[in-house]
Image 1 (cartoon, rainbow, N blue to C red):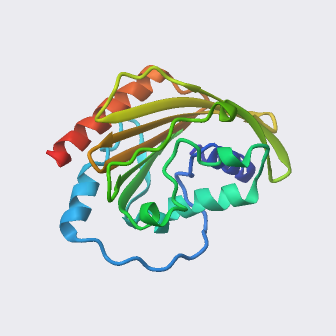
Image 2: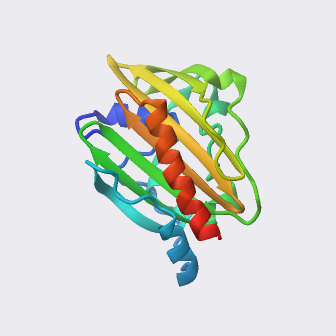
Length: 224
């Protein structure tokens, strides 16, 4: 996330499905059981290397998905916001409120640069599940984030299919005279799900597709 963006803006992006690359203090969660070393190595290997011109802002962090700092920060931001359509909070994303998802082994990393950030998570689920597509009513809605009215407009992108299932969206968040775009990608290969969020003043679909291609290559390699 851009370091110059205000706390309110960080929250408004979190409501759109993104957690900050620089996690703020989050509510404590029960300590998860340690992941087997082999599982941890597999998940870590599925993460992207540092993109050119960026640096690691957070992670890699390994553990149960619901216990990760970035996951908790996103959930906290959603709880603090008042959405016009509450059902749109986290729509088309992994639902960390579900016990089976929250307890699943995961790895997360975030990269940042002056132009924006990339946050990526890889989760090993107990079954071949995939988040439902974004509901029609969630393509446009508003929210009150820290007293600021923020509008969200999301459209599905025609990304070439990756893995067994994949989807990509581009969200524009506007409020308090600030704007940001959030590109999101979800890819499933077997029981592994990769979630990636790219944040910046402008996110180009072709750049998002290239990141998705690289991420899917990693998923294919560790799933082989």
